[in-house]
Amino acid sequence: MWDIFLQTLPFFMLIALGYGSGRTGFFSPEATAYLTKFVFYFALSAMLFRFSANLSLAEIFDWQFFWAYLSASTVIYVFATLVALRRRAPVTEAAVEAQCAVIGNVGFLGIPMLVLLLGEGAVGPVMMVLAIDLIVFGSLIVILITGSRDGRMSPKVLWTVAVGLIKNPMIVSITLGLLVSAGNYPIPVPVNDFLTLLGAAATPGALFAIGASLASKSAERLAIAGWLSFCKLILHPAAVAIAALFLFDVDPYAAGVMIAAASLPVAGNVYILAQHYGVAPTRVSASILMSTAASVVTVSLVIAWVTTF
Image (tube, rainbow, N blue to C red; front, side, top):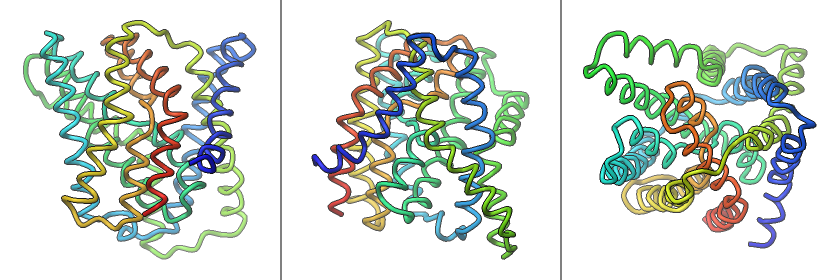
């Protein structure tokens, strides 16, 4: 456990460095926004494209893996929704809270950290988790919020979801990489070196950006934020572990990667959606802050456990 903690510590130290830079004002919110944009559209996209271009679809997609992660996440999603509705929260807020309970920071934290700690074989499973989060649950929250406000489903809602997916650089880079892989198109050495160099900036850039963005987060509604952090850090990986290890025939190594990915703290893009739709942004902000702080310990514990697989 101690060895794993020491291995994960540098990742969280980079987050802490970004947080300190943001809190002291050395790194302004505008600078954080531009750094995040660089990582999101360029560095992380380059890394994902290079990874997926060297994988086949069969190495990424597995039905047992898909159903294990989706079913476990759906159980926690529904449970968090019901708890919110029990408090008489509106459907829009319940949808946002459910998103906090199951959507982890796989893109900015999971891909860099899990691939380095669990090996190159983690690339496929992590990308599968990312695709489910983005396509299934990323679409679901838009449908629930928009549909709840309009009082009905409309083609406009579906069009909004489709455009959002098409414009997402992570989905685009993975898709293009798989097309290159499927067509057996060779990547020229200078292009591959360019992608490697640009992709190398994703890890430090993403972690620093996470910390700097946390500096602007508030810690209001602590009781609800604590509950959502518990859902994300404890209940979600526990449900995924039960599904992957006992209910579905998932390869042990892939199951370990899936569980580790499920243990990651609440993703920053949930806050972006909450802010965009004006639904409980401070609640999401506090959940991201609390879950990220607590994940220094919980993620290390989960990774230490799954490495025994």
